[in-house]
Length: 539
Image (cartoon, rainbow, N blue to C red; front, side, top):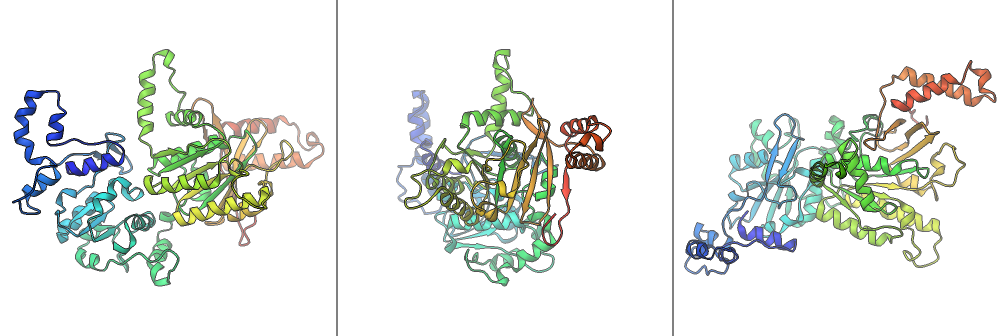
């Protein structure tokens, strides 16, 4: 980036970037300043440009300043998911920006660096790459693109890439944005793939079209995406919950534009489960927003740090402050944000903050823990009871999830049930609207001190239901799964059913010790139990 652009970007964050004479005047070495001033005076922002041909090298150097490296992006050759931006928390730049002429009115924006190089090599058109893939378009970059009359987005031809194109088009202004949507057999995944396949990249760019209106579509508009989803179903399955693969196997990951409702008894571990899932998302580059109304952010962050470390936190009293600081530095790199609400809060205020996070930070996953704290008396004026207020709140979040194309995980407390009662769909507090609007309903079940599992009661994506037993690891504060085989699970279920179904379980079985032993095994190593679903959606 040019020095002037860096200065403009820093001003958006309340800072500044000095260059030219301004930088010299701030130097503590007066003698060095006098010697350097003559050399850099031509780069000063206030220097006149009379007599210099516009867009010439001298004009650009005079008006925009020297080139400045903003950040370094390092990525593994073995796994592109292993990448690092250095320095953490630094400014944002655009790969290929130095090749864009100052008088250019059109620019091609690609998802990756190789794609930008492919477009520039094949067509000669100015091409730049997003700084962090399809999941992020930092708002600090928008002023740099204001001068372009037309922007062509060439994202990867997959679910996340096309969703990113729609989101970024709204940010940049849909009236000046075109998108490349290759169709037909042998469709390239991206610009680099198109170049390697010998396709005409200029022709593909010339066939770029405006993204259809968000509320109106025809089959022709959606045909390519529908066929691609049919042929590549795994690409649309959602972001996996990497630490709980059995749960991912049932729900097929968390998808944008959907809402998940989680319920469970008080103290059952809902926040612990959600914090672990949020780390799974953030560690995969998914911008995550936490709304913790019941637990203060400082306490939540302590739990997150412990789970992030996969072990007990270092104790500073033992001289491990350096290790704790290093852990904090790594955690700070995660795209994770926190709402500054605690206790009773108005839904409108929460939604306003969510909109800001989605626009500025490209948040894709929002956790709201929990709904009851947002049902304040001041939220809706009029003749509303608590159930009406809950329905209106759920409707608001459902609409937000769809329109902003983000995943919302909403915690809703259950009704008052007798202790030890197994929760079901009807246990969710309020009317049926919560479970009706949700795409996925998960219930955290706790049967005694040793058995705990998350049960999937609704899955709109493919109808698969089931449960994933959980084992809590005290050191790391995380849940893990078991390695016990299905035969052991089936044996446990048969024995447990016979024991509970009899008025005198001891007569049905030789000894209850067999069940107790099985409970211990399952608590120590937690398998996944899936239930087949018929066409009617019933187990």
